[in-house]
Amino acid sequence: MSLSVDAMAEEEVAPVPNSFKPPGAADDDAAGGGSGLPATQITSNSRVNELLECPVCTNTMYPPIHQCRNGHTLCSSCKPRVQDQCPTCRQVLGDIRCLALEKVAEFLELPCKYISLGCQEIFPYYNKLKHEARCNFRPYNCPYAGWECSAQGDIPFLVAHLRDDHKVDMHTGCTFNHRYVKSNPREVENATWMLTIFHCFEQHFCMHFEAFQLGMAPVYIVFLQFMGDENEACNYRYSLEVGLNGRKLTWEGIPRSIRDSHQEVRDSHDGLIIQRNMAIFFSGNKKDLKLRVTGRIWKEEPNSDTGLCSLTL
Image (cartoon, rainbow, N blue to C red; front, side):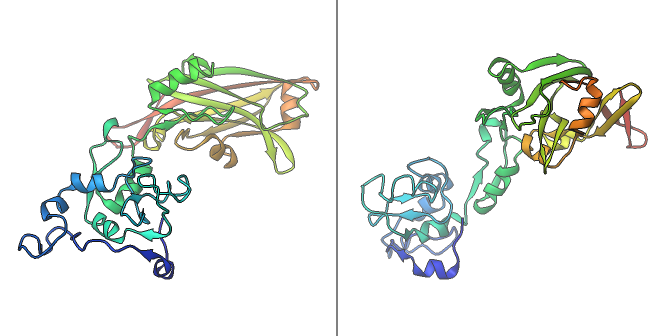
């Protein structure tokens, strides 16, 4: 979060000791002339990390960093939560910025917050958030679309979570033949959907089947997602097919990573889209929807001689 120069000028800034100096700057205390923090504390990342820890959420604070008149700091995200009252001394926070601490933070190098999950990267203070938003070690969100599920974790955790908590069907193999049944298919609602998990090539894939409104037209969409990162998802391909009486619709594509939400994939129409009338035709029954979807998943292996990809069925 940032403020314009004009906005910053209108804010009240509390007086702070002139003791925060970037590493390498001249130190009056070392010469016996200053009254602020010792230089050894300023140059210690761990010490400054403690100063940058928000007392409410315990996350690292980023500008604007707020403080009360007694010098207690707070991150901008938590300020509304405490109703403009300092959580330490209960004084009114107002619009006081701790500009000195914000300046010191520019010289810090901090580890990624996903260090406990395996990331060993260290970044300058202002690059840390950008990295964490794309870090390959960040946890995955639950791909279940039935309701807003807040579960996060690695892939083994999510597979167990989907099986045990959401009772999702689990299948092994790279081919599938599924039949989706819905009574009164002329009533298409966004809540009409199904999720199935496939395990093949030592990986997991989610297949979504959903009815939704595309503009004014009710449609069905089927698509596959890879339970892993984008750079791995591109190694796989999948095909989908629906048909009856010698007529068929087919789709072939690359599974999207579950880093992309179910809604993002659906709204981008990245899958097999079936108009309602066509779905009823393929069902062979105008009363109930009985749509059979077949398909397969395969992997593209790099060719050691040419560097190109070859197909593994």
